[in-house]
Length: 314
Image 1 (cartoon, rainbow, N blue to C red):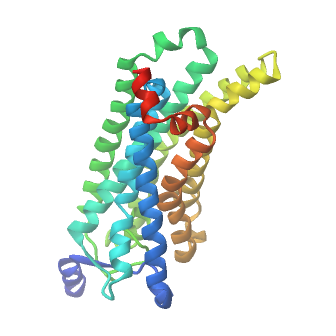
Image 2: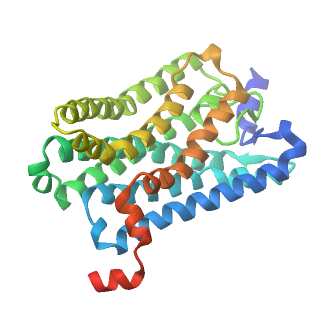
């Protein structure tokens, strides 16, 4: 009992194992992830500036896209800079408060993105299923409320969950088999009943992560049903192209996230977990601006338009 109490008292820092097993590739990984991070930030920043300064993109869909791009910058920033520092350091230590701060940011931004993707799905549902009333339904006030609700939900739920989680006692090994502080690897270090803690985390995930996902699925059921009823093939193609980018982003984000957090515990492997986590923390934020530019004619047109042309339009 004394040893357990001592472990709990002294466990004020953690060691993020990360990619230590690839010791000879640390510098190469640093350069790869650094370039990926810079391209991600610049790509999403380009989308934000493009929408803000282009009058033709002042629509609800692009309002949500600006929110998503800003969120993606913050989301990847909550993980990648710390990972880059640890790739160049032999002692990959993070304080308990630093670990908590990273988890606060990551969890808040992750849940906010779930809600924002649901809001974007609703926007596409109104645009395709109720085109004549789209402007009236998706007015500026509604868009701001939907975006605000996404942020408020993410902040309130994850601040409560993360605060509760870090109020639990930690003991045993300091080693976290991951490259950032996440619930799954950390819950194994909790001294109290881990089954109860895992049930609470799973319940929050199902309620607040799966609910937006269910709304997205219901929206696309109605969207696909409406598209199939269109008389012309050209009309169906055009309607589907307006939501294909969003659908790809949802598939990337939820596909990797659900596979990570909802698969059976006995199937978890630290190595594969890290690879999957890289998909939604590094690759998805990188691919989002690419998906929205390569598959969106309006954005490609805005990119090709010169600043002089924009001044003439305005």
